[in-house]
Image 1 (cartoon, rainbow, N blue to C red):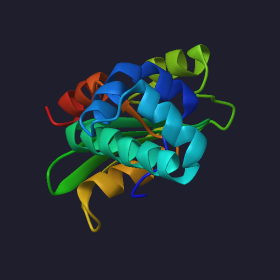
Image 2: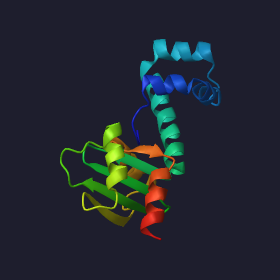
Image 3: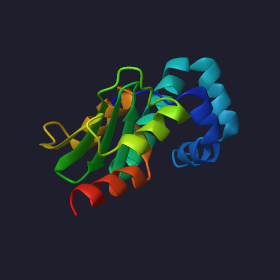
Image 4: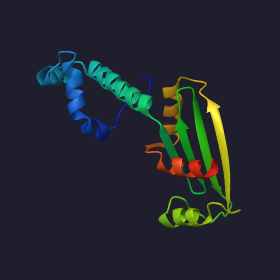
Length: 157
């Protein structure tokens, strides 16, 4: 398996896609029920293959990621061969970017000495999808890139 198996909730949300995936292999509901009962290892393999297909599709289309922690915000824009980052660090230890108040504080203090901002760029060493997946496993999530774009437009103006 290249990535990780989807969660039960993710499988439930992707139920129609999973049915189509099985149908593409000429497996209908009764055949699937039989496989699960008589060949659970084959059923597990099918779940893994489907999970990898879904992850690969999501990761291929991924353009922006965000990762919030108590005192840091990591913003990423993913290109074909590289990833750019904007890292915001609160110099005030009491700040908590995981709260609404912390985000308001960020807005009020964005371009003060209370915020350290670093900009970076790194070429993908591993395969692009694998590198993005590693960021997701560390807590990043896919985003629409609005925050990255707002900050990037200000610092590059």
